[in-house]
Image 1 (cartoon, one colour):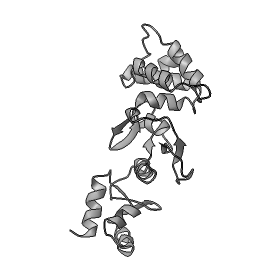
Image 2 (tube, helix red, strand yellow):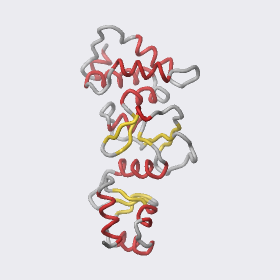
Image 3 (cartoon, helix red, strand yellow):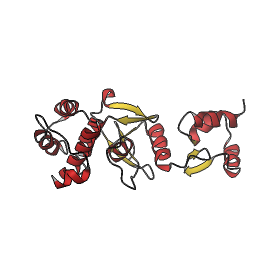
Length: 207
């Protein structure tokens, strides 16, 4: 099997994306890689990251590359997007790592989560991603409480978020000084008992 075929098959099984280091490890010479880009067999998404023609989701391609190069997981805004908790027009690719060896990955926001466990990660569309409940807790560090509350209600109404699981994970993760702890605790306190989440964001804002 030629190196080009191996590269194509590898990319096909990894979201249509392959990094330069992965292509070289499969036996493709740097000059051949350049020719395949010139021939449009591969499309350069960014420095060191290539995609198969027809792979137009650059958000996902950047996440694929960041996860593989940094050993990261999709988190925060990107996780909320792919879990259908929040669907804005634009989301900057966001990942998290346990040990931050670098703050820079062009076009991608990199957070550090030292308390992330395997139980709080699940595969979604072939990407390692924080669970909905963990995503809420992480978003508390970067969003105001009113937006976070709407995120929780969206997840509860759609069944993506389990309130008891969210509460259980929060009790495990909550600690003095952890960003967003007060916000999540207040949101959970307001949703005790027979809470029925609003069915839409408009209804949530009205309430």
